[in-house]
Image 1 (spheres, one colour):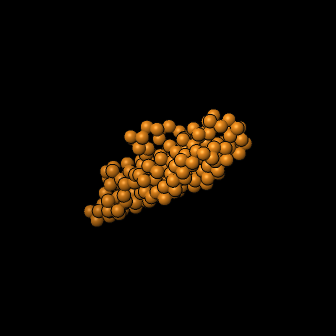
Image 2 (tube, helix red, strand yellow):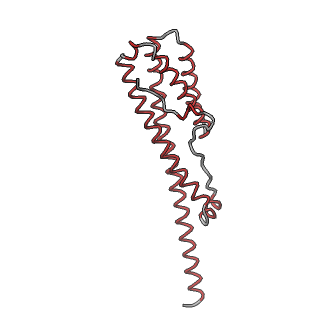
Length: 186
């Protein structure tokens, strides 16, 4: 083999490695976007259930208006939040207000026996489980992307093509109450 052949082989290997690395980053970014979309779908389901839940509880506990207003405000804030950190904070607040709504319902035995309320509880519990699973999938995917972005020699390709670090969907460290799941069973 002559020198030209060796140089061409080395260049071909480097080009193939660069193409493979670039495609890997594209795959990881797309998986992270898909995972975020999964979270958005489950959050939309949750947002759709909340007005029904509020109306059901309101029928039995109409004088608990501050709890209803807080849930409604938190829902609106969560729906309007953008960015991972803002969305996580708004969702934590919404979870907290939902807990207060379920606490209100504790004082009304006839509400706890209402079939519509029980069905909404089951659906919200199922949705909360799906949100947690979606968050875990998103965080796993983002961690794989961020690790690849920081690892050598992939970071060379990532930097060259402008791939960016993505934020994990985290609960606020200071909000211990938000770490508890929304209680939907009595």
